[in-house]
Length: 185
Length: 165
Image (cartoon, rainbow over all chains, first blue to last red; front, top):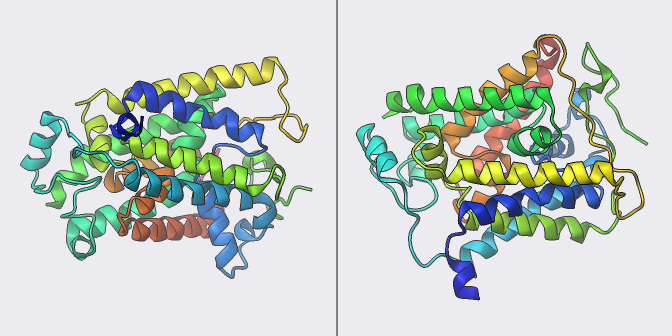
């Protein structure tokens, strides 16, 4: 059993299990909206006069921050007790494309050449880590949700606003992949 | 009961969809457990891999499309059932999923969404996976998280000057 669980889970297993988080969280009085936590953390730690961050983050967000802590914990369990015996297999076409733009490392969950403390000091590292992270935080709050809130909960709730947001997610992702990444290396 | 912003965004008060949620309710450990479950699934399903996101945006693997489509299908059926059967929360409250206002032009969705998409492809992670990557021991994602917090803070500071609806 443990051996089976340690294999990478195919999309038709992982996808439905992710979808179940939506009713599970609603059932216990929460909702699937991970990026709200970024706002709750700002509200909790930053002394600010900005009304956007002046609310009772414990009453509104402690459950969600606890959920986020669970994500860190679950990932740590998956990476240790359930660690895959074999390295992640990246499609040949993607490997070839990424090599062509100058990427050299293909192990792990993210290319160590960029996503490491040494990589952070390089131009691609700074852009992908610092600017990438900034855009995730700014964009998700501006759009009022991230992949969980718009692409999964929002579309599941048949919201046109979420469809518009998801089209934006894709337009931005395609632009970063096809235009920005090749310029970085 | 709800702690709303004192100065809501210009067009509609419902721009702030978040409502007060129970501080304890069924016990915080329940949220920890669901989070742990989610962290395991996104890691084992390889959704947290920067490379999988690249495969998706290069249309070179079905994996991420399969994950998102099946997750969405399950969520959609679950929501339809919750609504039609008027399922209540464990505390007996009504389950309400407040729709997000579209407005006339929907600026916030397509502009904010596009900015988010740029970051999603560069960092190779959206907020859930950022937490999962930290749990996976890719510690530099702590910097991605800090940058995302700064982005959230700056949005909060600039939001009155940005077009929303």
